[in-house]
Each structure stands twice: as C-alpha cells, then as structure tokens.
Image 1 (tube, rainbow, N blue to C red):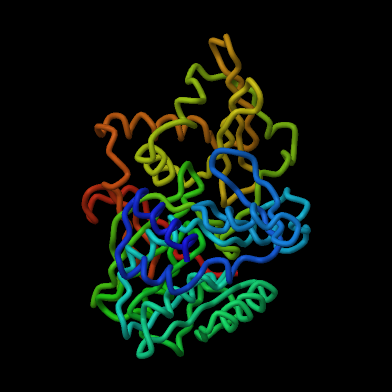
Image 2 (image 1 turned 120 degrees about the vertical axis):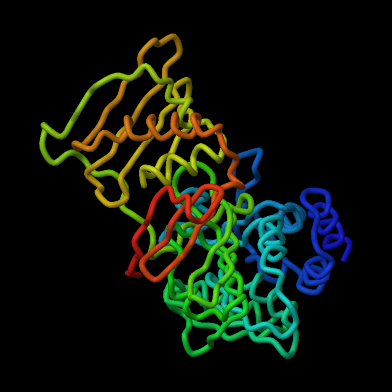
Length: 383
C-alpha cells in the first residue's frame, strides 16, 4: 500500500488526479498486471530489462513509477529480454492512464467500450469505476496478449467482457456505449465508435498524427451521429495495428531520386511546438520523424498512402545549405515548409485550439471552430 500511495502522490504532483481515479488505482494494484520480465522505458534514460525474480527491488521500483513498461516487442516475434525492437504492447504510463480516465469521466453504471486491453490494468480500473451496475467490454487485437490479460484480470478479481479482434470495428452487440476509452493511437477515428455510442457519450483516444507529438483527444457524440471535440493534451501510445502504414521503400527507378538542397534548417521543422506539427500534419497528411544521429539532425518525411514517396533532410554543423534526398515526384519538403510558415502566419496557435469532427464520410481537422476546417480525411476501412 505504501508503494501505491507513493504512486498516487507522484500523479497528484504531476497533473493532479480526481479522487475517483485515485481510489481506483488504490483498489487495482498495478503490480498484478506487470509480467515478471518486462522492459522499463524511463523518459530520462535508456530502456532496461526488469526481472522480478533476479532483481526484485528494481522491478518493484519500476512498476510503481510513472514510466511505461513494455511487455511485447515486434508483435511477439522478439523476446522481451532482448531489450530492442518495435514496441507492440505495454503497460502505459500511470500518468497517461490517469489523465485519460480523467478525460473520460467514467460514472458508476456506465457501459464502456475499451479498445486495447493490453495487460488488463485499464480494463480493471474501468470496471472499478463503473461498479457492479456498469459494464466494460474490452477488445484486444493480439490473442496472446488477450490471453494473459484475461488471467491478470481474473487473478485481480475483475471479469469484464473480453474479445479478440480489431478494435476499430468496435462491438455492436454491446452498444450503445456511454464511453469509448481507447488505449492505442489512431490517425483516423473509426466511425464505428461514433455509431455505437449514445448521444452525449464521450470518446477519449490518443490521437497520433505521425507528425511530432501524440495527443489526447476527447470527442462528444451528438444526436446527429457525429462526434466533435478538441485536442486535450499529450498521450503517447502505439499506433493501432490496423492503422499502421508502410515505411518508405527504395526508389523504383533512378529518375525517382532527387538531390536538391534547402536553406531552411531541418530543426526548424523537426523541433517545433505541437501547434505547428498539428498544422503540418493536417495540411500535408504526411508523417514525420526527426532527431539527432550523433552530430547530425535528420528529418524523415513519408507519404502514408505511397511508400515510394519519402524524403530525408540532414542538418550538419557549419552548413549554410542542407542536403535533401527525395524519392518520388511529390515535393514533400516544400509542402511541409509551406505548412509551417502558414502556421506562423496564423499567429502560431497552441495545440489546444485544434479540434476534430468525425462523421460517416471521415474526419475533419479544424482550428478554433468546427467550420474552420484545415483538412478532410476520408473514413479508413479496417484491414
């Protein structure tokens, strides 16, 4: 109990935490949902393997910190002890878990759809919040992850309805839902979640534009069967598997390779506030990853709809112009630079001024008002 109280104290100091969520965290110990061997991912250091049997002190300290703990690599293809690979399932940061639960404002008696069971901890927290008269349905895409979550939940004394499948499809036979609570990132909010929610219901999801930071998004479902809401903060989650896209491929012909230069410092695009990255993502529809590689700083751009269209821009110390390598005919770098300076011309709006409307035909990203639309994205069919 001392460890749980310590964790709750950390959460209160970071962002505050509603008493109902604090009570849920106290009633649902996190350690019941963490495997004996996992990968701790501190924000201020390198990931490291934690082992309850070999090093119990380190394991307990990691479990009751605010750091995420990765429980699966490469969709299960790589042993977690290897410590390196693409993160594909985790016990999310308690800070983010608490913040999404705060946004969801779950009440006793609510019917909740959870997308992304993971370890089962959030499903248990939701079950505690809705109480005996409520109902939680949780969907997990990975059968092995779902099987372990079912065991974790049973051992902890919770029995939500658990399903294996693509959460983008929701669960029609459990509708209508009062809340849709999502624990994986989405680029496009599936309309099935709106269809399966009652008017006035809230959808809380990580929004991952694949350009800069990931965000939390809270939408309210209207009687007209749309959902509308604003970006609420930060929430870093793995992208929903059915919305993953292929990374850039080699050029198909030599003519597709371009080697221009640019006078715009790549760090101007890669290291900017969230308001800028939201504008660039909305206006271009591109994905962007940026960061240092030794002394060099690289911005990698790609077109999620065309894996043969991508670009890399490299900053090197002392350079007056910067190398641009581009595959395909679409001028990705020019589009992103133009979008950035449009954001500047608008007065550099903060991320909280952006919102999303979800309708049957797709989603619209807007600034300040739903009628001030920056881009439309067509509804994406689940794979």
